[in-house]
Length: 458
Ligand SMILES: [Zn+2]
Image (tube, rainbow, N blue to C red):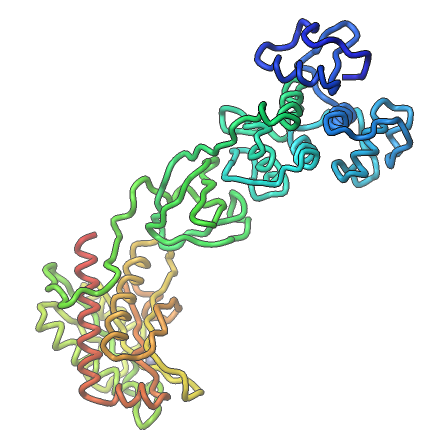
């Protein structure tokens, strides 16, 4: 690579046939020259000074030898002019200690920085390599270089960014930078499509839980997988691109596909079920109060109506209380477990300092976020929430997660329902009326039936 008088194209005997067109092009354009013995030495590594020189010639920088910004590149050195021009053009930078280390062998990762700047490659696409963190600074320039058609990595899906680069590889990349006809297809070839099989799956910036989450996916979400290494998959889902644990990806969508809307009329439940209905508070614990209503009374009234309606629908019910008593929270859980119930629903009403807060909300717990219990609890809360909001005409405050004891330390799928706000006049007027209590009870029953119908299909 050291510049000597140029040879005519094709006179060097050791130019590999597969790269001959590109290398001849560089020789004809005086970008590269051979060694004095008329060899090309394609497998020799390229030094940082040689790389700067070749790129400088390729893009027509001023190569006049002169003083450089680097103590270790003398003005007399063959590449001093190109190095200094490349620094001035913002194409190369030295090391933090203000050296350039001209005789160090350049790596493929360093090449990516040089080439993307020299040939102004700014576009990225969905390319990925097993051994590159595609969201890192280096990953981005490698992506730009590959998207620009200067390289497409190795056939085994790696890029080997820390490897040194051979004169042949380097020549190909520079030729492709100079002449679009030589560029290679950078079309990303995804490994395929997979589906998320976890309730909530973090998408991370890198292939390890130590990287920040940049988004999350839901059960059933479809992702395009570009690479998998060490059980971390590089994926895209819409505009979201990053890494997820491959453990939570399946080839087929999960069978867990709840209906988007409750079906009317609710189909009868055919499976055998036992449900625990927990009227919140009671006895010494009145719960919240407002507008003349006390929570423990409302929850009991609605719970007793729910019990009747469920039993009429052929579903066995275990009540945690049927009067003004106070079972502890653990006792409430135990009552359900001891009766071999399969599900637990706790009924509450809300209160807030401000009168304006209003609406219905439902809770579940994500303690074992990826467990079947968490998924079932979420479905249960969601079905009941949809039914309640529709029946009561209250504000839909949504399905939320929380650590309430009866839904957190409960082995059964469990939901906690806040019917509405006793502190809000409109909500309270509904919760205090027998008519609305019946509507609420029917909605909870319908939601439970929706849930059982979903569950029985699992
Ligand atoms: Zn409560």
